[in-house]
Length: 284
Image (tube, one colour):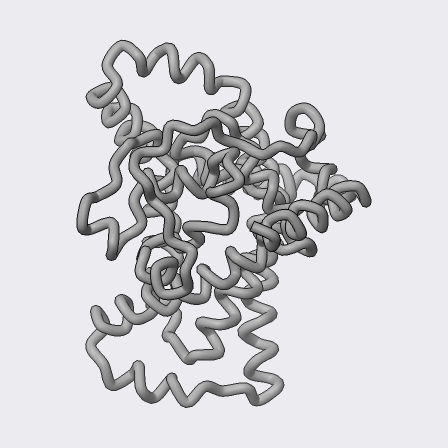
């Protein structure tokens, strides 16, 4: 038992160190970008965001140590399960005949389509309590992308990855989709006023996603895509009236700090409130 505990500590330490190292480039990039755009205001904004960043850091550490290894096991089991059950996709032969850059683009585009509907599902009564943790950041920064409840991490992997595997995308394309959506996800969560102009009709801008996080009933149930804004336009959920200057976060009282956020989806009252919010949103 002692050996197993030591092995877990060593593995967790290595995983955490690797995850922290991977944050080095985003920290430098977004720090310099914010300094260039905001100037002196960067220091004040960062100071005000410290309480929210602290929660984000704790969730990042918890997910890295306890959840990411489980997700890797789950993904492998899911892939092996498809093989054992004889579930094969006719798409495998199609992707094998196409150039890799086309396959990667297709995986990102299809992945964003799947992610769009998965994200809308996360705003339903069943999944909102776990997804609400991500929306509760009132000082949204690029690091808000790491503010996810373990349940939300699991549903994202299960729905997104399973769908891509069933469509027969090769592993390199699935990995590329994950990397692009992850790092672009950092970008659209950054505190940037950019709408992209006419390009905002093709790609999700930071302003577009910021509206999705606004405490504003007119912004509820809008802007679900991560990369391509065309999906929100096609399905009637696109709304970007300009740079978002509205307050951010959610109205629910989720409890204070890391432990309050972690336990919120485990409380019955969270689902009652989720049902009430869904009813109000449907009435709009």
